[in-house]
Image (cartoon, rainbow, N blue to C red; front, side):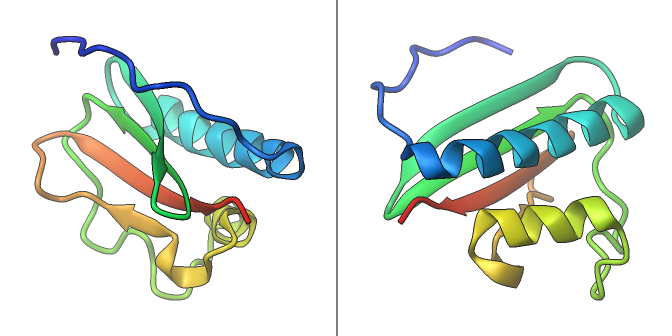
Length: 107
């Protein structure tokens, strides 16, 4: 993949750094554990919050992911720490690789 120029810098409130770090660690760990190839992490401003994207070269997520009841503790923690409830996590099925996007509340 071709690298693009980085987005402009932005500030993350100090009280949101620990939850952001935990969410990022969970998603990167999952990509390393279940994905393939290179793992890429992107963080950008999005409306009133942040958009965290983690992707790898795997073939994508199974149709049942994330499970409706979210039995995995890690993904339940991602939902909680993101601060947006069940709307926080989106699996991007429009790409031929694995991509998960988490909208993160900063206020």
